[in-house]
Length: 237
Image 1 (tube, rainbow, N blue to C red):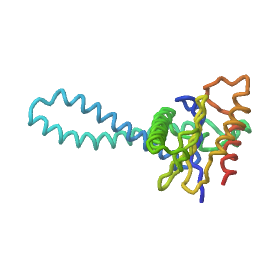
Image 2: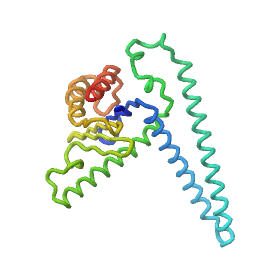
Image 3: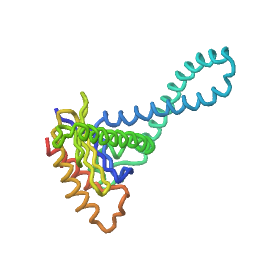
Image 4: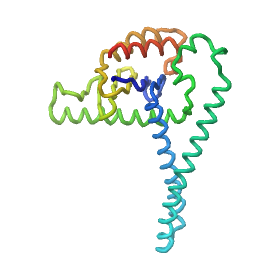
């Protein structure tokens, strides 16, 4: 069954809108950042240790301690992350009840309302996502130019690209004004080129950018926008 995992809107390199619809999408963010934390801690450890290792015996001992340190870092990072997520989730749920919320917020996706993922985790994941898209665009351009492909199948140097793995499909729409619309779905999801184009023209331009109170590049927080976006994407199934 076709499944919608997440949807992002970027302005240049900044995420101005995100929606995570499945546990797989949230797990991807958490796992990506966990490995990033581990790598950073290991790099820091390597830098500190290299200045102290001055003999072959010390280097051999360092390799053994490094393996133990790596294991400890993984456990400590995971424990710290789980504790942080749990405390954040509990504090938000205890301070927010449906009775105290406006009607338009109650209708929002609970994934966004009670999401326990810290904002910094989202930002790091989105940097990785943008890096992948930049690489995909560059790769597509190289393939097309090298093989003199005027009408390539699958890869495109135009405003839209789609790429699939054995589990996921990423739909990527970019405009000359710096907006990037990214949608992650299951592999059996239909092509979203026309859908993303419609979201950009009919919703982003006519509903958001046309609003005189909206500041270009700021986050989109409208619950109405979120509801329409999800319905628009799902209507393509």
